[in-house]
Length: 123
Image 1: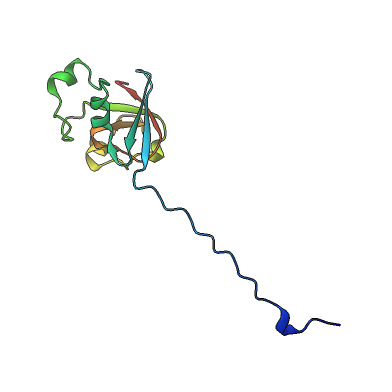
Image 2: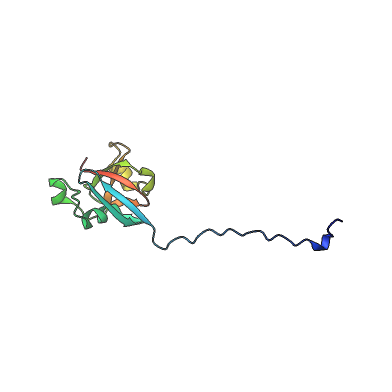
């Protein structure tokens, strides 16, 4: 005897939902020379996080003549060792100020961190 079509129960399909993204997403910054690993909020300014964690960005001349992070002087140069893709794109000021420097150089005051990055200060 064959089961009747009316005896079959419909199979419910499982709905897979992605877990909600956390409100706080972090980015890690590794300061190579100093041996410091810093956790920051995604989108944090690289210069501010360095200063907050006692990482010295400036040479002697930069200490005397820096602009305070306003993107005017070009003294907070760092070399990105890893994670360049996790920084915001170079600004127009950086393009002008760093045109004779390697592509791995950034101004810390202009760089926003969006993921893991390793930098060398005072290259």
